[in-house]
Length: 563
Image (tube, rainbow, N blue to C red; front, top):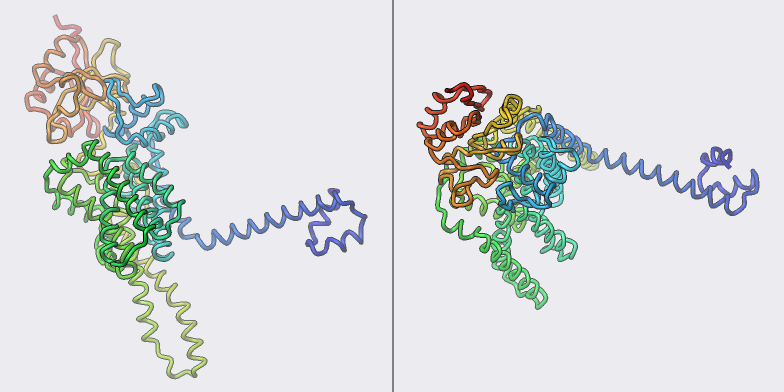
């Protein structure tokens, strides 16, 4: 049978009868076996051909995804966790060990619970490390590149998809937050996915889109409270769409609209119950100038391409343009004027939409240049048939040429702009209120030099809890402009992350150094500058500086030989 297989594979199915007549007489099981082998071979060849064709047609996006992934994975675990990352990490460890994200203080950490679960899952697979904590964000960062390509391709064309994915893949801002053990990249992906699924559902009314939308929306609000802005976006979009269409709707459409409104009202009630709405209503700030400055810095020329890109999309498809515009404008308004703490990471989740707008404008420019070039072509000297043939040939070659030149120009501008990078970096600037302090080095030093009875005093308690497994005292400072009370429990006596005793003034710090023979004080530069002058003076005169590395400081006191 094996001998027959080698001979048989040189024939096709039509030649089977001839083969059977010229060789041995095969019985029915033999024929079935040979046919099955043939089917496997033909299926394999067809699969290989399809795979080859798929790669050929999508080589650009494949390269973009591969290169974008490498930038996000490069030395992922080399940098120390910063403060916020350690919060997510100790919550994930608690979830893994105890089945619930409860800090050692007893406080349940319900914020971004989906992110906590995914980090815990990653810790379970790779072990507890910086790489493992950040790996889920890398995955969502890569998926966001693919999603930007898909939305651009489906709602526009393949060129738009490629350009949008290109901008997302090599944006410094995107790469930076795709490498953090926080929820912002995850929020961005599900926010964008929810917008896409919402539009697909209201356009086609397919149940698969509805079910996927429900799952995606749930993932969005489980990633961050900013996910609730989708409710406002959807309601405003439906209201504006209804006013613009001005047509009578049947009973089925009325019923669907009623269900949607009731669901959104229920979700708004949930947001109110969580205090999201009341916090927005009672917070009045104005960070407009500051955020615009950082948007220009972080997005570069793409921000200025996105503005006319809005009008391009509106002209091509006003409903898609309206939805995407609302999905940017509404969050920007709320964050600019109603979120107390300033942080450019809060704007991050809408950034791919800005890149999609920019891609629409560049596509418009490609089309404009192409049509202008075609109109200026003069074939009057040629015969009618020859001229038509030459013109068709020119059209077929000019558009790819214009597209290629546009991509090359885009690459040059991106290379010249600090907002984009094609080269991997070890560290990225995360903006104000997100200091990249090397807590790992600091606590590694403390761990290797401390004695069993030593106490730890820190200005950031979560990093000490993660890297050292303990933190005894929290030296307080004005963390976010509202004081330190919101970071405490038990009437302000304990911090909420590590159950550390709260030191509210310099006198309490002095008592700690007198009551304990040895101890350590760890602070980064941000907290150091916010400490009271009295506390800084006491630390510098009453303790010994053991380490000053990068933007981290380590002090210790030793009363062993004090009489």
